[in-house]
Image (cartoon, rainbow, N blue to C red; front, top):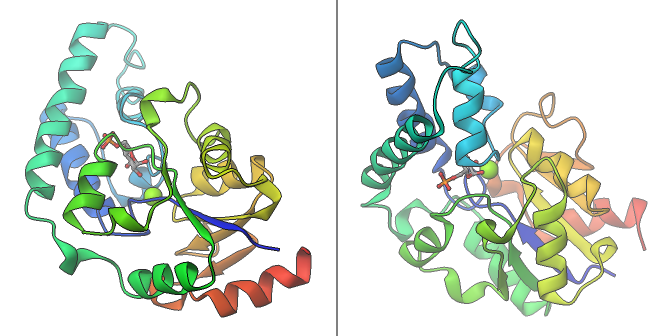
Length: 223
Ligand code: G6P
Ligand code: MG
């Protein structure tokens, strides 16, 4: 049976994906590098440094001339822009249906975990006033291989004391769906089904995430 749900944060619990986009766009503009929503799709779920590397790979030399110190400076700069953008986030920015789903999960005595690559995730859970729902919040700094590697989802399952095959992972990013599937979990995608084609089930937006509908889909593949 299903024992736990493991959530991504950005783009699933709250729409901070748009703030990450804005902050990266500002940095790319400052550096004179191209950046649009299509490019941003590749950055979703990817950690801060790996995201910066992808942006810099568009430089003529692929970013190879840039020192580590310079990269760290730009990554910190992006983060300070991002932190200003999320300063005013409060519970009004929880995406539709998410809190209702948390209630349903608690009622059904299922465990809830967080597998976000963001080092700002815990702050955001506090601002959204949903931290208390979580039985395990993985510290992304403790994870060697970021998404699409399965490590962060496996760490969440371990933290929850649940076998991966009894976990449902919820993600809005292609890299995140890959991570969930690599961990041997059932993957629920939120967003565009053509981008999230590796998911077991895709809903167009969070208002469609209900335990009943997920259980119905899950019972067709699992036990
Ligand atoms: C999530 C988001 C990414 C973001 C990453 C790191 O995976 O989807 O867009 O770059 O977290 O976030 P951070 O807050 O640590 O820079
Ligand atoms: Mg996300």
